[in-house]
Image (tube, rainbow, N blue to C red; front, side):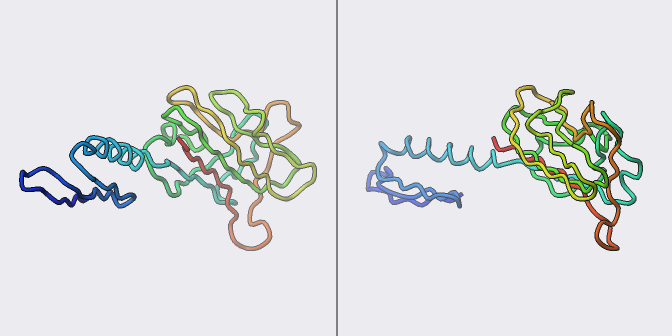
Length: 191
């Protein structure tokens, strides 16, 4: 942040600019200085409350070596990119994540599975109905992207093979080639 100014003979600010790198706020007189400082505070608050995100992933065949049973969660044991402190693992868990702040989150996950089946988001122990994705045929990916409102601090989130499903899900190893295949979970706090 920088501040440039033009002073009158009495030492009062006549004009100037406040530059926050994101916005330049002109200052036209002393009376508007407080207004401009309020704008600056709003801009700084917006800059410090940037979107938080965290990425978690697994690489098959070494991760999720055992099929995901009905009611169990997909493991995402590796950490990807992250920003902010409102999303983290719940302790040392490979499958449960902590949403530390109230707000709206965008949850995106994908996994290649061998069987027909479903996956969905489990938030604080309850299945988020609009997040359940499935496929009726063997082979292929399950992909979900949805917004959820978190109304409780320190909410838990996992990706689960929902109760009531028929069987376990095998995360496909090396699907379509010789390289390991990833499953990904991206959690973004939008506000």
